[in-house]
Picture (tube, rainbow, N blue to C red):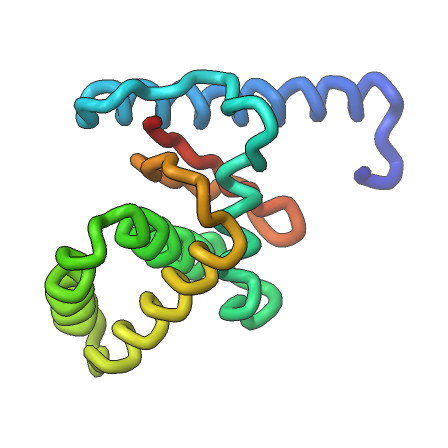
Length: 159
């Protein structure tokens, strides 16, 4: 908490942050509901399942270089979401989808290497299967908010 703030100022600051978080979640929900033809879950995850934002962070943690900017975290969360969803494809479709995905990503990044993207995505898919083999949720959107030590990852998903 910020030094020199009165308890009332800290309470108001917490309330502002919570309102901002609710706004992010609402925006993600609405965006997902409008674009996805799957049942979108709002506010409640299936019993016994980890929060999807926590699951994605567990997947990309070995790739995380430490402190990250919101943009870098957004990119890593997007790449991890793509790998998560790829892991849900039937085996026979994964190789071609991985090839297309890697080529597209390499073209979108100056100096991007198809093999690097393919290796990263393949390792994330393997890690997802190892850590969350029965989790069939489809990531529909991710959003990063905050800055510095207060970066927050919100994830919308469909069942």
